Image (cartoon, rainbow, N blue to C red; front, side, top):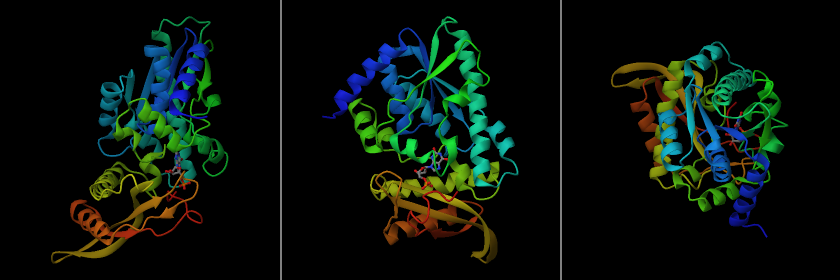
Length: 326
Ligand code: XMP
């Protein structure tokens, strides 16, 4: 019978045996999946695991710093943090097609990750004969879904990772969570003593805010969405709904409309608020948020976020909609 303790014990033993005296690297996203995977592997091989956390320019507000602090100080992980936001935003300039955005971000991520992995490899004591391991927090629904709607870009596939790496650095994949659903991963994280802040974190897509900015992604639009997103999450938390909904976020639309502010006419951007309830992300219902919560979110966004003058609520379930807008 399946229990978190059994799972942890057998996984740690298996990983320890697999990796032997080798080294592993793990891409962190700040989310629950990659963190649980990293903590499990760190239990098995200690500081022979190095985590890489990349700022792709489309993270949430303050996330690059917050995640580093949590991962190092609370989880004790060895983290290399790389701020590549400039490089990503340059590559995203002019790109409006959703799948192109995913490809650009996926490819850029792999390039940055490769560079960092190479540096870690060269500075480690690992011998040329040794196998290097790549840890990924792939879940069971990812295994199913990545073959259909989103293509392979939301996880780093192993074959992508051998590109620029030294020929003697053979990367092998460790995916300790690939038979699990999200709720099981959360139980394991809790059992590992990880902070609730990480365990309860709502899922966030790999391509980040880029797939929540319809049309072109620019630094200015990222900043605008970061502010709106923070207000949505704040208010959902204040209302005690953060755990009840699967995801809650803002989407910046390429639509401007007319409004009034004081005695001024405004002509500014529209923001959609999305909140859904779901078990596993494969299907979802739009969440019937209390009107009071919607009212506060809307008035705060319009008064606090420069450039947004209209807020709408998305009442589409999945199917036929998807959770994200792109
Ligand atoms: P959709 O929008 O297809 O999303 O209903 C289902 C779940 O997957 C997340 N999602 C992604 N995650 N890379 C990711 O890592 C992606 O490209 C991606 N697209 C969607 C989404 O946030 C939801 O939890």
